[in-house]
Image 1 (cartoon, rainbow, N blue to C red):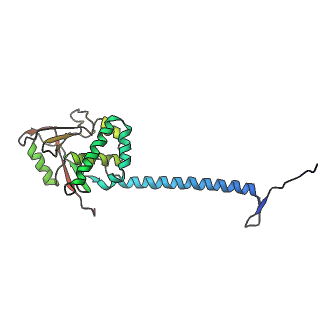
Image 2: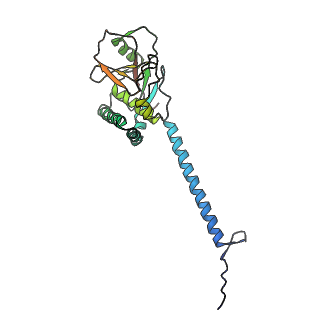
Image 3: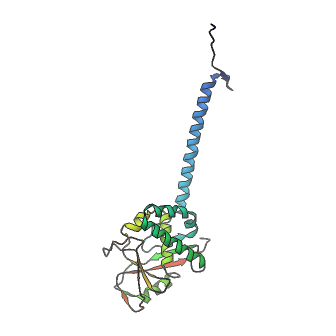
Length: 230
């Protein structure tokens, strides 16, 4: 029987060296894998950089908070998924988001694409309810309603806040915010740590509007339109 010896195929490199084809293929596969990993890492970094661009300052007392509806629209599917992930309460919140977004789309003059909200610092004994509404007109374009408040929550989700915290964990703001509902009644938004109210940020409740009623504990929540060039 003949003994047959098969030599390894070799490839001549540009520098004149000979390399077994098997080793060359192995090196090529390794380089290809490393290249793919680098591309994935680059994509992740680019995505993170994109997310960072959408982050505004956290909602704070005495500072304007930017709401960009264009950013909210871009993250619509992500917001929906995060709401659904926490169960029934999150699904209800998503339904309210959808309803509010629809109202805003039908009333573009009332709800601009970019706006800012402002929480007053509580430094008084009391304010009349009408006085609180007037304060918001003096500093901006008026007092927030529930539609703007739901935009605020959606923007906070875009900024990285967890839906679980917004729906189930106590609000960290010092006072419940006083708002005007679309039906004309007064509303109360969120909770307050100063009064040991453990309501989450997404909490809402309402009452009849009484202009000359004294309000001792809440703060008005104002908004203003922001020119698109800003």
